[in-house]
Structure formats: C-alpha cells, structure tokens
Amino acid sequence: MKTLLSRLLLLALSGIAVAAADKPNKDALKAEVAKMEDAFCAMAQAKGLLAAFQHFAAPDVAFLDVDPRKFRGPDAVRERMADADQPGVKLTWSASFTDVSDDGTLGYNYGRYEFRAPGADGQEVVRGGWFLTIWKRQPDGTWRYVMDNGTPDKKP
Image (cartoon, rainbow, N blue to C red):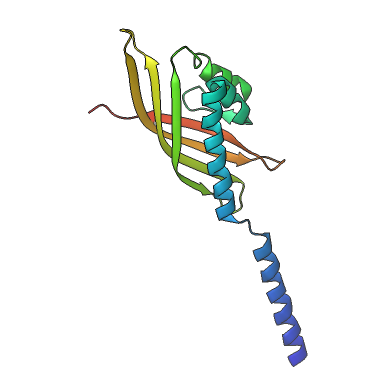
C-alpha cells in the first residue's frame, strides 16, 4: 500500500512539474510585446505610418473607428491609414503598461500618443491622447496587432 501511495504521489508531482514547465514566462512575453510596440513606433518614424501599420498588422486586424464589419485585415489598414502619410504629419507613442494573457497568446499595451500636423493657418497643431494596442501571437511565434485604437485628450 505504501508503495502504491508513493508511486501515485510521484506521478502527481511529475504532472505538476510538466504543467509548470509548459506555462509561458509572462515576464519574457511582456518584454516581447513591449519591444514590438517600440519597433512599431520606430518604423512609423523611419518609413511612415502606412508602412508601419501594414507591417505590424495581423491578417485579421480590425479598428473601431473603421467599421470592423466592413473592413478587416489589409483593407482595414488601408482604409484607416489612407491619409496618414501627409507632409508634416507625425505620430509618436510610447507604452506605459504592458500585459499578456496567462496562456501567452494575447498581449496589450496602452500609453500616451502625440499627433502633430500643420493646421489650416500654417501653425503646427499638437494633440495628445491615449492609445491601446492588442497583440496576438501568430502561429510562427511573432506578435502582430489585431486591434489598435486611440482616444484624444478631452479639451479643458
């Protein structure tokens, strides 16, 4: 009887060890998602907003400010970013918080953005706000955003 109990206990403990080994390292995944957000912004500065939004988009990307029932994937990116690369337009952002799901398949960042563009009077217009990016781990292990949204600051 003692031998049977010992074997059952050993079996149970080995199952716990395997489950723990299969659990993703959340800190490492958070760092990956944060790095993707930084790379996304850097590419937007270097190659333009449209190029960055296209490059980092998941195949099933959607936006709340572009009807997601009508536009998904690359069409949604083109619809949303059609006028993004105008002369003098600059969008920068930085995440202040990152988290990932326990199973390591979804992550998100939120933080501040700043939008700069020439105004009608020739003076630069500067607006800020908050953004949210939801990232999904792809079958090849890369992260691509599935939703991106920004909310401008309220006027004082």
